Structures are given as C-alpha cells and as structure tokens.
Length: 465
Image (cartoon, rainbow, N blue to C red):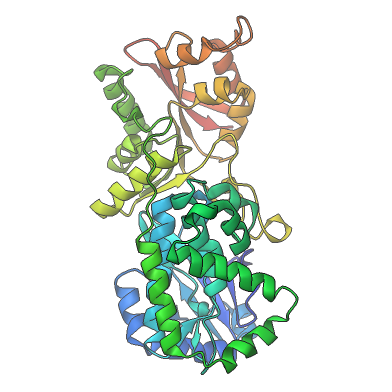
C-alpha cells in the first residue's frame, strides 16, 4: 500500500491526513484522540454521518503500520474524488457550503464542542451535495473562549458572498489570488459606501475591518485573552453563529444574463446532429467500465447526463459561464443528483497550484484524473476567441492522460463562422479540418470519427499515445 501525505494537510499539530488509492487516513495525537472521542459520542456525529453532511469516518482497527507508529490513533475516511476548491464553485455552492459550516458549528456547540477553524477548504462536494471533511477540526469547547473560526469564516465564506451579491464582483479571482480569502478591509472597500450601512456589512465587515486595524500590531494571544476576559461563552457564540446564518441566508446573486446563459436551446444544431452526437458520446463512454468523465464546456450538462446514462459512475461538468453552472447546480441540488459535480473553470486559464510551495492546493489537471474526457463545442472558442494553437489545445487534452471525445466545428459552421467573421482576413486561415486532424494525431490515436449529418462538425474518439 502506497501512503502519501496530503499536500494540503500540515497546519494542524494534532492531526495529519494521508492518502491511499482507496481511502483517506488521518493520524491524530493524544489530544486529538480525546477530541474525536467526544465527537464520536455525540448525537451530531451519528446524525451527520447518516445524512451525508459529514464524510464517512471510523476509528481504524488495522491502520497502515507506519501511521500506527507515529500517531496515538488513526481514522479512516471515505475518499472523495475529485477534490474541488472554492474558487471553482458557483455562488450557490459557496452559499450552501457556508450554511453547512454554520449548521455543524451550531450543532457542535450544543454538545460542548466547537469547530476550531472555518476554512472553506474543509468542505467538498459529492455531486451537488456539500460534505464536511475535516473531522479533526472538532474539539472540546474551552470555557470563556470565542469561536476561533470567525475570521476564517468571514474571509472565505461571507466576504466572497457579499462581494458577489452586493457589488456583483466575482469572488473567484480573489479567492484564487489568496489562499486566505478576502480580508474585511478589502471587502469594505469593494462593497462601497452605499451598502456599508446594511446591518450584516456593518457588523461583519466594517467593524471587523476596524478591529483588524486596531489589533494589527497585537499578538493574537493578547487579543484572545482580551476576548476571554470579556466573558465570551456558548450563548454569545450561538448568537454570533445565528447572526451569520441569517446574513448568509438572505444573500442572493441577481445576475440576469451572461454570454452563454441562453445557449441551452442549441438552435444551431439540427435534431439529427444532436441525436448523432449523443449516440457517439454514449458509445464511447459505454466502452469504458464505470468511468469518471470530465465534460469540458458542459454548459447545461446535457452531455454529462448522456454520459451517466451510458454508464459513467460520475461526471465533472465544467464551464466558464458562472451563471449557467449555477443554474445547473441548483437543478442538480433540487433533483438530488449526486453524480455530477458542476464547476466554474476557464479552460484558457485553469486553476493552478496554490498555497505553500504551490502544492498545498494542487492544480485542476493534477486533481482531476478522468477515464474519459468530453470536449464538445469548445475547440472553436479556444482556437478563435482565445487564439490558442491547435497543437496547444491537443497538448492540454493530452495532459489528462485519458481517451477523448472532441468536436471540431468546421469553418462553415454557424458558430465558428461568427467568430471567424470578427477576425482579419487571412489571419486564421489555419483554422480548418486537416490542420486540426494533423495536430490531434500527434498525441492521440484516432479510433473513430464521424461527421454530423449537417456536414459542419466532426466528432473524434482519440486514445492518448
């Protein structure tokens, strides 16, 4: 059994996460073991495991030898694959994750426990359902101490949601730019003076920013002692959590339109084209046993659902249009579908490695290792809008190390022609089917190809070489 330390788990002195192919292991210290025993004896633990809010966890009776020697005890967790990060979630996903964090913290508080941190990275999504994964974050409540996760919650949950809701400023680039999230002072400046008198902004942003400046030169221990002396207790923490919960629940993103938000009717496809495309995708996916499918440019998830129908065990559906992905997430959430994970991702600028040594939060390509990649109605956008050469597009697809189904819109296709008409004459004459096929065959063995009935698009099934 090959055991490797998780690159994002090294900041907690009481526990460390390790990964094998079929499980996640958590080594815990003696103090960490006492905290876990208190959690395991609680009603919250049993209920959260049963309803899926908490990752499946058990005390390992026969853990790997190396871990047994280094730690007082070892926990075994269900492995969630693939891992996603907050800067790839939609507004509704981040909001649901925030509410889960508060719900579990309030439930823990009622049983003499607390969550010692509140980073959004402690939550993952199984399809459209948020799951809390950091069992080591639960600890016994210490009398008189404030909730230690408040700052993190504001920086990684509340402030991003406020910026998107009140100022229509996307939180993704800001969260991707700082692993610590959005500070109160930055949030206050972006929200602007007109919204600063809202009660939630006043309480959790402006006053928090003022306190941040006041204690900038003070040791965190001194601040903690001051708060403890003020008589912080469970009732005050509960009131704080309830206030945060109300603040998050009332937040909405009122986006009305986006580039491809009305793209779901696919009016430029004939019925025969759509039927042929669905059949080609289904044949390819069904030829792989229970694959994880990555659907690049998934839009409303139509072909992600085709992949599920063809036998995929799960699908990661990514698109750069935040609004479309948010709609997809809410539809999946309402239907209870847990096999499709919708994510916001710009293929021309996918998530890089972030954090300590660039490894604490691995890049999207490192985290998502599919068995089949769908790349439908994408090539012309990358080649003509983002001006990425065919050879580079093929290299990107090859990075996933999996078979691909890729669609090439010909120059006379209505969507490709619309993009080409915006270009200077002669500058993109290289955008043609022979050039695309030459690039594709440098890295993939094309085992099937089919031109759709309209004659304007061709599908390819390629195996990486």
